[in-house]
Image (tube, rainbow, N blue to C red; front, side, top):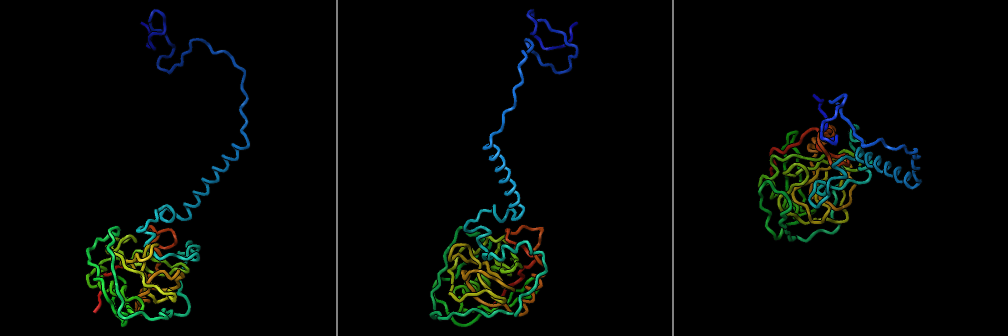
Length: 316
């Protein structure tokens, strides 16, 4: 009996015999003719340059990824993205992103002076609040009514948090419509149970950002408020200001508490101040630093290692 093999190789259709039937075989109809060896082609100088350039580009992209990470340069900066709803860090802060693990130290001089308008506002002013369907609003709240608002006087607010109380004084002379909006959100319980999602302790951007019901920097109340800016705006220790997107008049519910040095352009509405006890609470959170296990946005800021949750926010 013949051993197994590929059928049909013989003219009569019978099966050929192979010495090792279980091994693969490569069949030829005849032996290949000998050909003189062909010398390898030389690579042209242009091809060498192209290959070297491609390798360099790949290396630079890998280094950039390691330096800034996914959230910093691959996340799409849309109008309501996580990057857009944050105060813009200065070049100094961006260059110091790698030093966030260093011990935090307060700037000298204590509390910074509050900015003041050289030309007072009319009293009253007219406020308007614009519905924004693109802004996530997991907490249903009603916007304040459009119309007149006083530009004189102050309003106290108490932030009861998981790490201690923070007292605020809202100043209508700085931003009357922003004060109306903040008080409205407080009275509707919008901030209760929310957490502060972004801490920055880098030089030029030392603040804690809060007020996002989503918790990642993308959320808002479902409407936007107008900016209330003036040339004398500054952002020093003790200042309370609104966050917004890169577009004007895009604030909503997010705000930031300045406990150190902040060097940003006057594009963010200042509407109040932080009391001394609250600054002490913020200092402790700042000394705790950034939580490296949770993603930031690539500029050295990120969720605080000491979580800050608003248990109750109240105003008279």
